Length: 229
Image (spheres, rainbow, N blue to C red):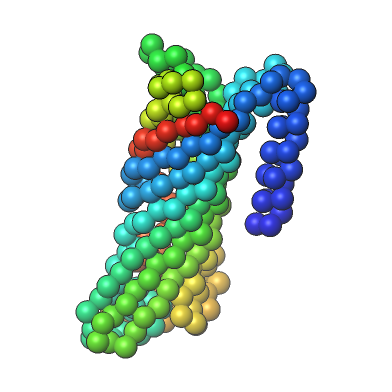
């Protein structure tokens, strides 16, 4: 992760310097909010016209999303025990980092539309609290992914644009960790709990992935504003 951040920072400096000397590149910052498998908000920094002869922009973004973390009853069985006492409370959040290449794309009569695509990285946490049951634990995972979408910008004035975006991200399965237990996609699991309703067969990754709604398919519809620096 540190290597990724360093690489992206170097890219910003390099492209910015090139733009100032060769193509009068302009930079912008933006914020978007809306639906991202739940409520989401995203802040971005964009480099316009990243290189001479190469159309499009480079954008680096950071976002936070609030979403349904999964089934509280099954999460408890899979990560702790088969107890059923307590009133369950649950919440889920994900932090995501993304890099997008924004390629100009002609869509109907919209003048400023882009086809966007690039890599994704997500840090997800689900919290399950059983009030009166003396259990409160997190399930976490970190995932790489890919994404694509369409975005359209409408000029409001010389500095501000209104943005509308839609897209879909896909995150690859990764190890889910909680309490003193973890489940991996290859079922190299640590301290897997047993299902007392299925002949005490140990739970596996398929069971866990069904109970915990980690990021996987993440549809996105957002609106925001862009400010030209």
